[in-house]
Length: 190
Image (cartoon, rainbow, N blue to C red):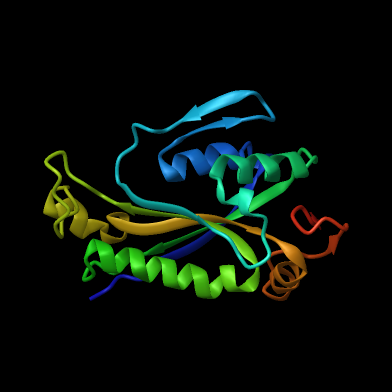
């Protein structure tokens, strides 16, 4: 039986977070943060089996590059307490194999976020043992996986609204209170 897990968090400078550092960690990659001139290198992190930036219709193609996207978000937000993005994390049912889990995550993110005009940085985490084991235990001892099964297979990503439709949807579901400004890539989210 699948275990339900879904959480949403704000990536905010007020809590000391960086959108670039968060993206590097979630994608297990190395990204350079132009705002603070610092590299964030999480390329030795294991378990990320799929990583992609999903763009809505009308978004600039260059935003498909993770570094360009998150540095643009950082540059567009000037407040010291700016809310840079939302992190959405959800469990992938253990009954699915890796390919089906990735397909499910892509479909969910495409329908629920990208279709509404948000850019999604999707990363699928699948615990892999030192021997390459991706079995039901997720490469861990069975007792550890059974105690916390949602930690073995999950998708997480960061979302950033793009364009009027995304901002309107973000307001409707309570992501933001008020929006101003003319830039569709960096709306002034208050």
